Image (cartoon, rainbow, N blue to C red):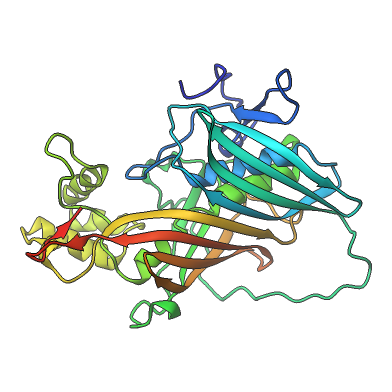
Length: 357
């Protein structure tokens, strides 16, 4: 079963992202034990559940154990095992420290007794920095505004909207000079009863969108497998590719999650060319290893209003890559800085030069 307890009806007074991230408190077992109220999402082609959901739910669980005047300012996460969407998750919060100005919590997400995810969070008491402060911020770049009614995500059914912009410096031969940018926001209106905690959980959820994928984008790597991993079962990537191949050029260009390089390769496959023998590398595995969020101005934004994110990668090598992300409100307030390291492995060619899985 996907949840420990039968899910209640969807609460129409809450936004979609609040319903998705809802937790059930297991106080009869342990006052610091929680579980997912609703089934977790397993993205097509992914090894496990969407990492942003686990990040957000561990944050939500930890927020329930600190005083109301404390706000999260950082969380450091590690993805240990791929989560199974068919098994409930138990979140156990450990109250490491509760001081006058700072509080520390660790949260473990477990399935079948095994840790799949762990995070350490630090909370700070509001207005504890004093009247005089050292202040500066990295400014938001000048970018086109989001377009109302446009959504890059499939079927417009997810808990948040996304609009990807063109890659800055996309023609550069140097991946580290490119920047991947997008607008996003939670669908609907986040309820007042959710408080600032709901908005923080929402941006934690959205922060994992296309994050490690930045490396594939700046290197123009091919992400859709044209080969079958087993004789009996097609890969999810094959199924995605099959849908893309059925689209005409105009429809392909409307799929804003596709880059120009993706569209050209899809057109070549449609024309009967064999991409597995071309020189462009193909992704064999790409998963998140760790994820860090530093929250700034944590009570001065709404996650159901447009948020701009800019991602860049400073390094890739040895089967891994590092990506940095900045998140801004539409008026240019920096609300979060994020870092993620991911596993990025290419398919290795056999003796004939054909990629092997």
